[in-house]
Each structure stands twice: as structure tokens, then as C-alpha cells.
Length: 462
Image (cartoon, rainbow, N blue to C red; front, side):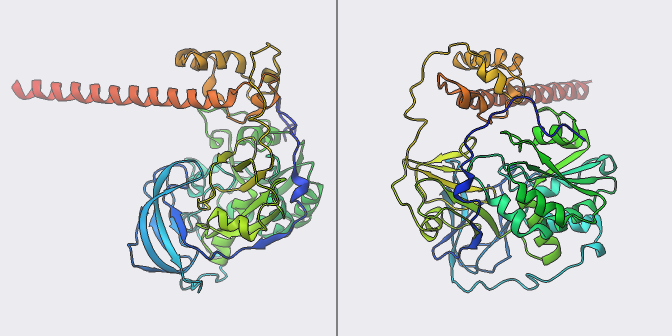
């Protein structure tokens, strides 16, 4: 077993006291439902419904657009009003299916029926997960069915459940572990039936002792499932950091967890897998934390996918003071929002509302060479030198400095006394390097095709 932590990292104020003791409450939407076709890593889903069609809870309204993709499932019954561009939390306008909710919540046949996973084959389980539209619910949104089908299943010896929830303020996974521990264990047992040589390990930070106790009790009697208490430190929930903390194994950006014999999913994903496989419920809802010092009643809520953020805030009690900053996701890696007229996606994890935008009020000054960013970086990078390359848009230098290994976790920017926009600079450089690589690959492909065509023409002439 690993060392329960990693080198680097930071200890920001966690803000979890605002919502951690609030039980999960289910919200029912009243307005239009919006289902983006791009709410996962990979190709956008393709609509299988048209304007005017009646749809039901649990019905597939868009199919996977490729191998790395995921279907979109309707969370209400009603009528397809349109398929049009809609704004998402990431700031992009993407194709989305708009459904007029009829408030009847009529479901497809078989929705919610119990199912015995022990009578299913490996391929059947993976297909159920795929057709349920399940992706990583920790934020990344990678299609789960792809994770469950590595090249060599027999070489997977660890399936890790991420219960760290290291982002400040977020408490939805914590509440799931307290309220639905049996389903998390049930989902893990389903997964372990796919990987014959794997041990299941649930990693939880030690600032959540009640979750550690609850999950340990739920796992009692399961010989191949263990609950591990991890040292509290951000970003403990990062995939690379979690793998190292639990197994002692290291991966980089050129590797998949499967290359180190591991597969990783978070606690909410385990719940979704259990509900899909054992209860015949595809992914039609997720649990969000709605919190921050501007919220009147911080809490945790189960909300249907497609529900409007503004409606969630209103039903959650609204603001007690006008927020200066609203964030989708955690404060370290989340995305600031300029409006709440956006839909809940599969990878939505929270709505944070802050009375004061502390970051915008802190002036940026010159780097003083203190090295705090270097000490904080969980990937042992050199943020100071990387940022100099970023300022010059020197992609070659940025690459030499291993800038593509950056997790974009924000630890460096958090500790920087000069308040340099380090993470933003690295994100932009990674996009720039990625674009250059794609352009180079396209050029190489075109040249290879031209040479092949030229050779074929010469052979025809002979």
C-alpha cells in the first residue's frame, strides 16, 4: 500500500462546515430542461429525437457519437421543443436538446426494476453502464464504459474509489458516503466482478472521519474491499495523486491509470453504476453542493440533469446577499459564471456563491522568486520558469519544462504572494501546444498521403 499522501500540495480553507451536515434533498424542476450534447470528454452525442417528439424519464435522446462518447438520457417526461445552441458552464455554445417538462415524470418501461448483477456477463455490465450514459462524475466527465474496458483486464489489480473530495466547500460526495454507503459498496462490487484480479480500495481524506467510519462499516465482510484514510491535502483527489497515495505507483500525462494496473472512479460514479446496473436507472440526476457565504441555506441536492442553475438556486433558498462571484465546481479548479441561465450537466458538481471576489481584489505584482509555487506543485514542476515561457508564448521552452504535465490544479497560484495568474497562463499554453501538435500531425498525415499518391501515380505510369 502507498504512503497516503504525495509531495507538494496546499491546505486551503475548506469551507465544508457550511453544507457538510445538510442531508441530500431532492429538487423537482418546473421550467424547460436543456440537455447539452457535449457534457463528457470525447465526441458530442448525436440526437435520436426530433422537435415535437414526446420523451420519457430514462429515455435515450442522444446516442454516443463515437468510441469516446456517451449517450444523453432524458430526466423528465415531456415534449422536445427544439434542438439548438445553448450556453454551458464552460462558456461554450453547444448543441442541446430542449425539452418542455410536463411534470408527469412518466418513465420508460422497466425503469427502476431490480436486477441481479451476478447473473450478467462482463460485456452486459459494460454495455449497461454505456447505455446509461454514465461518465466520471467527479468533474472530468470521461465515459465510464471506456474505463471499464482496458486492453488487458487481467493486469488491473486496483480499482480505486475517489472519496477524497479535496476541493474546498464541496460536500456532495461526503453526503453520498454517509447516506448511501451500501450503494457505493454495491457499485464497487459490480465493478470488481469485471476485474477478476483487482482489489477495491476507497480513499477518503482524514478530515472526514464519519465517512471513513461509515464506509468501513459498509465494507465489513468484503475481503477484497478496503477503506483507506488519506492525509488531508489538496489536490489529494487528483487521479495521479490518489494512485500514488494508495498504491505508491506513478503515472504521467502520457499514461493511463490502466498502465499502472489501476482504474479510478469517484464515489458518485459508484452510486450511478449501482443504480444503472442493479436498479435499471440510467444517469438522469446527480447530487450537487450549493453553498458559499452568499447562500441563504447552503445544502446538498439531488437534481435532474438538464435543470436550470437559476431554478436550483431559487429552490435552495436563494441568496442572502448579492454574490460578487459565482463558481461552477470547486474554488480551486472551478469555472466562474457570469450568469445562472445554464443547465446541470453530468459533470456539474456544485454552485458556489461568494459575497466577495477575493481574487479580483488582490493586485498582481512582480515575481519575488520565493519558490513557494515550486514547493506546492504536486507534479514537481517549475511554475516560475513555465510562466516566463507562457508570457513569451514560447511553446518549445514550455514543453521542455514539462509544462504539459501540469494538472491545472491551481496550487501554485494559491500560494503565490505576488498573485500571478499562473494557472491561467498554463492552461493557455497547454491549449497552444495541443493545437501545434494537432497541426503538425495533420501536416504529417497530408504529406504521407501525398507521397503515397505520388508513388501510386509513378507505378501506374510504369
